[in-house]
Amino acid sequence: MSRYQTIDLDQVKTYSVTDRASKVERGGFASPIGKASTFSDFWDSLPDFLAARDLHEVVRTLSAARGRKPILWMMGAHPLKVGLSRLLIDLLKSGFISSLSSHGAFAVHDSEIAMFGKTSEEVADTIRDGRFGMARETGEFFVRAVNLAREKQFGLGEALGECLLSEQAPFVEDSLLAQCLNANVPLTIHAAIGTDIVYEHPHLSGAGVGEASYRDFLIFCKQVSGLCEGAAVLNFGSAVIMPEVFLKALAVARNLENPCHGFLTANFDMLQHYRPTQNVVRRPTATGGKGYSFTGHHEIMLPLLAAALRSSAGNG
Image (cartoon, rainbow, N blue to C red; front, top):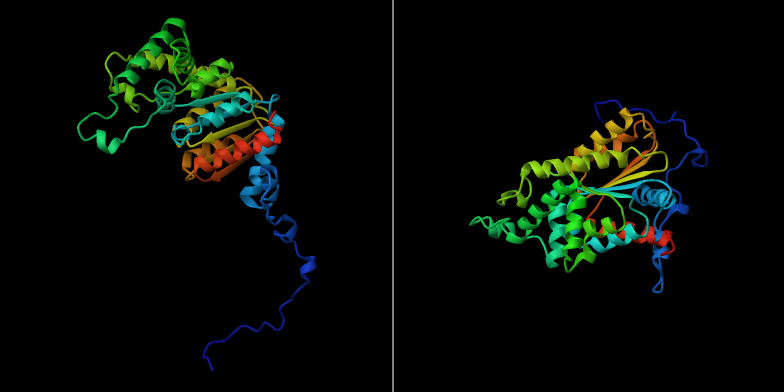
């Protein structure tokens, strides 16, 4: 016999499971789908738990906001590098994007796709001898766009899109910079000086980039000032720049007494980082609204979201 005392369970009080609140019920289980199933069948077959339930809620909110409330998209460059431009352009044309904001790498990759139909070099190879980032045409294009921005008092995103259209870039149909301009939807570029390959090139004006990108910040602040109950802010893969820019823009909007409360936010990324969690999901919704986090690869998560949105809209 053990030298240690044990507790006596004879007096433990039990109760019926029928009186207990349960978080999981079979009514929320996933359902198998058949060979001839549609996307709607798949979407409706998902379990009604955790991230699947949250994603349904995001889709319902965006569908209700479409054409009525602002839907602001922020992102890094990675969605473009995994081939998602056409899906984003389709969502743009379908009314699910009322503004789009990103940083310089996005602008570089989008411009190269529009001009050359390809982008993204093998850095490990080209850094060896200093060729990394030295593609001549990309740098020269940015010089022209920054000069246009200064001449016309355009934001950087607007100037880049205008140059792609006026120069008749051969693959402009795959360019968000160009297609947002065609749709009269603001696409703002929030540059971080020195982080992109174009800063390696002669003749690019850092002052010109700063002036044009600052104008884009003011445009972005105006878009953020329209946030309200039922609106939405999505962030795809910007871990630092856009979450920081968004928080400052939201501060400006609220300081000017705009009713920017009660909206939905959602962060999509392969890893959940500190700044998106705080500056997109939590802090902006602390006064009302709801923030969501979804973890997964962009090349899977964004097509899933896009298909759900288009299905909810009846592909119209």
